Image (cartoon, rainbow, N blue to C red; front, side):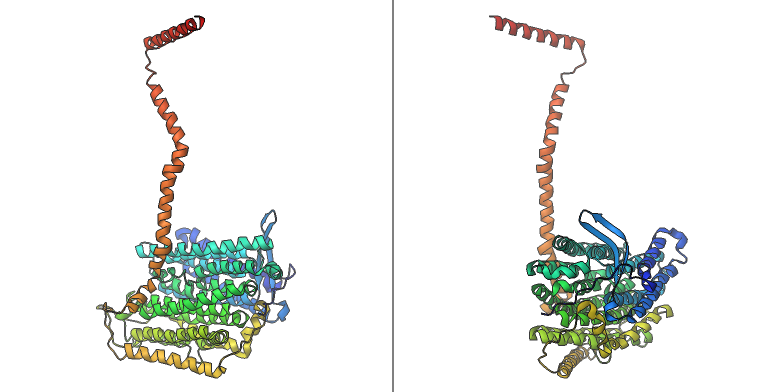
Length: 639
């Protein structure tokens, strides 16, 4: 197995010119969050405008830095900005340092670009919400935390952004906390992510123990001297963290509940920020996984399960946002699969991450536009024939649909098909599972499209579908263009060459079939998935209420393959019983031991207190009795 290229050490002070503004990319949305969350009602009238301007400013700086980075030679495309010493205790020396390289450059464009469009969309979507200013403050905080995550030069700084993303997601998912379901979903996401964070924290401790550093550059330089067992443990702990943030099996249960937040939050989490963090972590840590083949294998297994698990869930959900959430789990699985395939797939994993950011943000915001026109109804069984009432939403959503199912020349065709090719070169079984996932994706996305924009009109009474305002349709159009043209990144293998300084040269696995045959097979499977959905949901009447007399497989898919029940049985239930037992032990054992002495002294004091009557004659009688006792004792001794 060919090891990934080490990240070269860049001399301090190289962050000159436009690169000296790397810190400002994070500082702008962070300052926006501070102003909006601490400024009070004074900022209500213009807070949404400030909140939108901050990520746009970061996007402009990111574009300028990207263009400047492109002008540099391949060996000079890593820039380190050292701000100050963050932690300096004993042998632990961690700086607040930023690493700007081809990988972080792409993430900056995605986070700030798509994030800015989501902010613009939110101006219209949240226009009637009395807490809109606070919402934009949380959005700014989310973007700033994600930027910190992808720009940090060390695992500890990455973890700071990692936890910031977790906090912001909690605040945004539970933004409408007056709804018990939203409050519960926020807590669920927060708790499950803490499970993943324990793995991430343990990985950082192990890194410091092994390498006496948390710096990517230093660990990369020393990784060759570590044993495979230690690197495997390091990689598996990183994977635990990645599964939590990216909602991969077995830590995926929070993802669909997170749809309780406002729809722009769903787009931000699923397309540009939180769920992409795990993929970034695996690819950034390529120097770990290239030296831990067993950990790479586990990544592949987790990815394949997630691809199929999320796809099955998407087939049975009638809630339009939850169907898209199941799709996200599946598509992130493709990215994790690419990352698990090593140097043959790292670049394609990032490529699919970018294209997915375009078309999934497009479709989530499109779903929000549908909800806007349908009085916030999320049940697709109450939709139907909306393409005439909402032509812009339909047109842009159609582009996203064609991209995600992989129809040429739309973006998903170029990115997802490349991962399928590499998977087939690695293993026929893994490649076959990826092909099945593509067919199921075509089925459930066609089902969603037909139930929403085609079939029969099933609108509820007093519902009057209408197109969204321009402030909401403009981001849809921009994202549709990116969804259609995103494949341009593969022209001349540009993205492969661009990421080579970070992940190493691309490996070329031996394919079982010519590329054209794999492409043709994939398209045939996709067409079959589309055809099955057309037969079931276009040519037949769709009932307004989901039938209850269904197969076990359908019930399982509706219940998310019983993921919540599995967690309840394996983790939550035993954990609750353990805590209850510890509580009893603490009250009767620990507290009894340490408080028993005090209780005994108190009891003795209670008895002795009864002797203190306050009467002089009683005390005189006691003294007389004492004298008699002493005299008798002395007589007994003398005799």
